[in-house]
Length: 394
Image 1: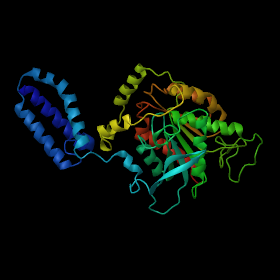
Image 2: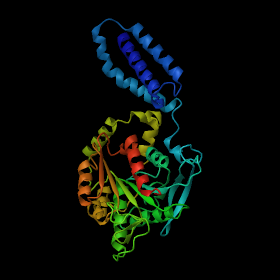
Image 3: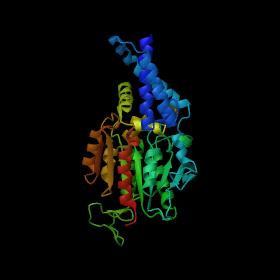
Image 4: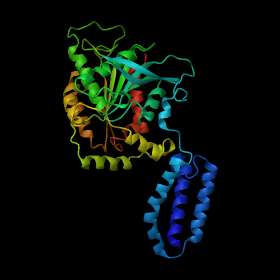
């Protein structure tokens, strides 16, 4: 037992040393205190070395010791001075934004809840555009959004994030097709009415992107087919052909669309669920331990779910039919982003969507799963830059 204890102490010391060096506050026995972290690492390594015997078989204890040490570090990081919950981004005094306020958006007979955030403004410059963020099935306007929203704010964009029908604070209105198609146009009208906003983008995630595509396609189909004169300074005839939301004579609700991990069909199974969990654990997101504890992630995961008039999410995706509807978006600038380890909306789905709308740009993020795509820092930066380039004042 002395040998096993020695290996465990050494493993725990190495884990604490790495967490301290990397700033992984949520995987530390002493929180963010670096001096204490280095001191405790040295103490654990020294104690383990003193107890270590010369028998080679002792190394066999490293297999059970490593996961046990990791579990202890994550438990400690969840209860001993854990990071502030990521959802504190949506508090009024968070430094990542200039302001954040709760909003109630008229949506037929309902009021749709959301948050409206303005970018930090040290130079007192007006924002250059706005972007609407639509979450996925079982998600909310805040959970797992902090990195994406911060990236958009960092590009000088006003951000509106909402709860879809049946989700979060909007559960009193169950998700039902085609009733749900009113939500995104209502949110876009609200965003366009904000002072200084002339151009807007839309970022949809999973079910949210399928709903966005269906809603925008409906606007395109119902709009007048008669050609309209281009506005001054428009990019008529260019590859993107967008100005003030006018495309092919139709008045559209957005100037650019980002569709993240859009499923074109969903054959949900227990195997798919466990496969997604496995790929989520494998994703390169160790930097999360600087920002969120394992307990906080678990709380966000189990606070999901939604109310619906449909049998399951697969039925909703089938009704929304993103593969057919995306072809009705004319020359709208579209960015498709899919994860290489996504079993729900695989990269093959992104390629099929791109074939249906050839002007779209497709990005495949190799290490991302369905859950972790919006947590990948570089992917969020690419999305934010792409939106800003298309909605900012030129």
